[in-house]
Image (cartoon, rainbow, N blue to C red; front, side, top):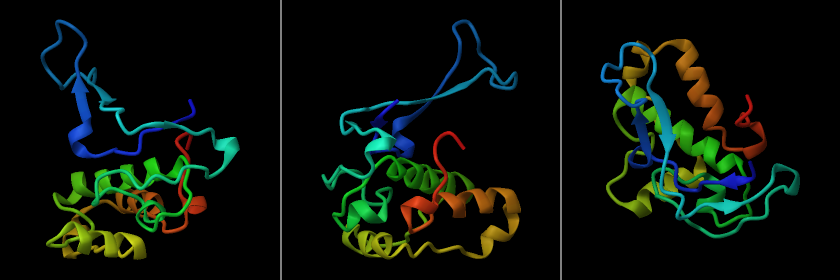
Length: 143
């Protein structure tokens, strides 16, 4: 759709139920992304044209943290961080400050602790694929 959200994080994800539906066990819940205040137009065919360093430090892609040109793959990176947080309950970039987190992000230094042994190989592979340092190695939204 040509929109890069640029601030995908847990706080911007909602679970929505169809009206008059209460239980979540019937599979009718829908995940919705909200807060498009930092979003920008960027078509995949245009390549990497965005340059604004925006987003939340733990969730920004390395190319954003390094203030390089970027495109749609930054949202895939952020979804990978979100998946990591959902699976492990913590950031893949354990740091005391935003600056420390950005240093780890720039280098793509994801910390997989012992707890990952309890995560399925498929979930770990999906997370690792989305958190590839090189944007072109990340999956697309269509995948």
